[in-house]
Length: 367
Image (cartoon, rainbow, N blue to C red; front, side, top):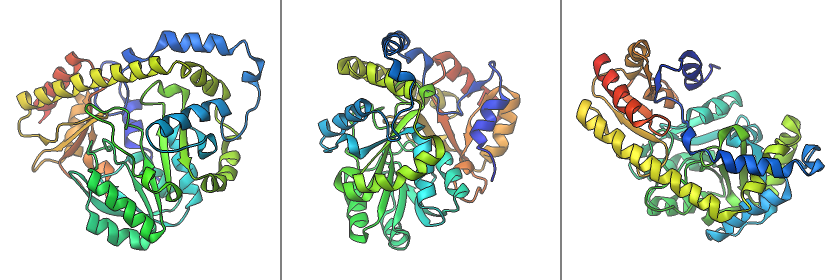
């Protein structure tokens, strides 16, 4: 096992470095005052400081379930397991499916790949096309593995989104094979145009749907969840309890209090979408201006922009960029076999407009 390249990068840079590496939300958009208000309110209740139930406080699970139901995915609180960030949810699932074969996209999320390696899951990569995985190859792989991990909305790292047709096809394949889909969905609320229907809504008894407040509210509260059939969730509880008994109670109560005002949360989400869309458009303008040889797809949501240089090793290039105080994640980190390539993942949400322009100019100088 090796540590995450992204976490190592974040630890090795200082405040003067322009970072396009981590999937960091914009700090200026954190609802600080509203979180403060919610925090002060919950401290009047002494049970906030007590041990809690392993699957999460009922009120918060009810609110998450209600959001699913409102979007046409009937869900009860017993379909929700609160986790310590979406990352813990993934670890619990990897431990549950330990040593099995699993079908994943290529490129795929580095954090999930590391968790799968740690739990001895044998990853089978399937090519990710512009509108989702190659269906023919996915079908072939899933017939063998009966287990898949996908990020259909503004995928990390590629920022691609699955078409409605491919969502239908994947749901049909999973259902016909009576397999399991792990659908990771941390970016689904960060759309610029419309929110897509999850694949899991079509196969509720054959899927685990992962969600998180880290990208939409604040990461440090570390609250995520798994949405699944109640019987499937019961299988995970023993693993969850062996890790931490329950996720942070104070964080859960803060979130529960904040989410009582649904209109406020919806406005906050729209503010994020508006800000990120402006940043994404500006990032594209600067790439076209300073790095026209970089080929990419314009994001339609999420936090990342992905593309490639022809004939350039992006891992070698980032070593020079670090010396110039600018960093990104080279694309080879998102593949099962880290063969050098010219692909790059940029995060555009955390930097200012000035940092975006300067950072891209610095990359041009290194190039």
